[in-house]
Length: 358
Ligand SMILES: *Cc1c(COP(=O)(O)O)cnc(C)c1O
Image 1 (spheres, helix red, strand yellow):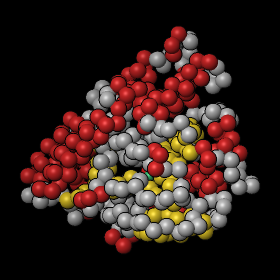
Image 2: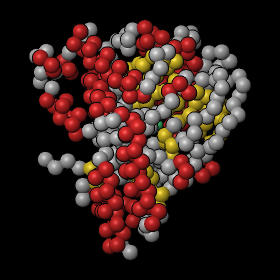
Image 3: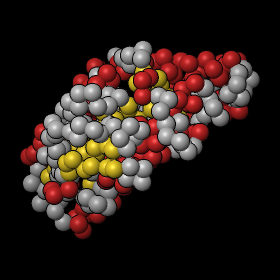
Image 4: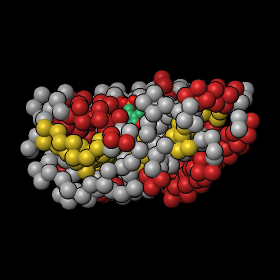
């Protein structure tokens, strides 16, 4: 069967070699006589799977020893509540930078639990830029950012210097796309289905000193300390998603880690952005200095033409290019698993479409 080039924002493409490996182990994982899907999480064989996933992620991201890695459920959206429940605990105040739809939702959820200050927003230009912020509320319990804005195709080009105030980042669509200095963050969270693996898994990387102060009434599943003390197995973890994410981590390590990955991602993004710069039909919507390596948003300026392009692209095997309804136009999500060739072929298709529609 012919596979398509899938530009979905999430769930999204997985590396072919990872899918093949998972398929080859489907009926009988490592001589256990069963699939990982059928395995008790309280067995040595499963423990070795989750341990390897954690240690490979630590290696990949160079996660310092004083950080816990949690494999949770509920998506990034669940973290919109878990973060304030655990961290909004001294002054019940937090600063939020709103750079898109997900950070707006995160701020709204946090406002149920305390005072939320929107210290900056890029809403005035439909989130085409990233606000530059260097002043924070001195009594904020944390500062929250969305590192890569999946819907608007922008990415922070700087890490806010928050001093002693913990910096929290939703990294759902940017994690593992390039190296980041984890020590600059108090907490990083990410849904797996963009750049790590299947949906159903949410990764939280949290500095140890931030654990253990969840407010009274915090549901046990949302208490990071409980999850950390139980090795992410207070209850049944998302076993299979962790296994596949583990295969993705191994694939990244085997292909040169995140330094190498960044080079490939820059190359891929440039192929697309360079063409958009010269195209008379298509144009990129995000400001140049903050364009995402992962989500490339572009428009023709004519909604009917956008629609026609998406349908023509789809017929040619380039699927899921329709932009989010709040931006319109197109979005090509080119996460780690999208090969360079997929982007080259998409641009070739766009060039031809432009010629035919001039
Ligand atoms: C997809 C996404 C979310 C929502 O993730 P769920 O896992 O569906 O809850 C939140 N934030 C960002 C940046 C995303 O890309």
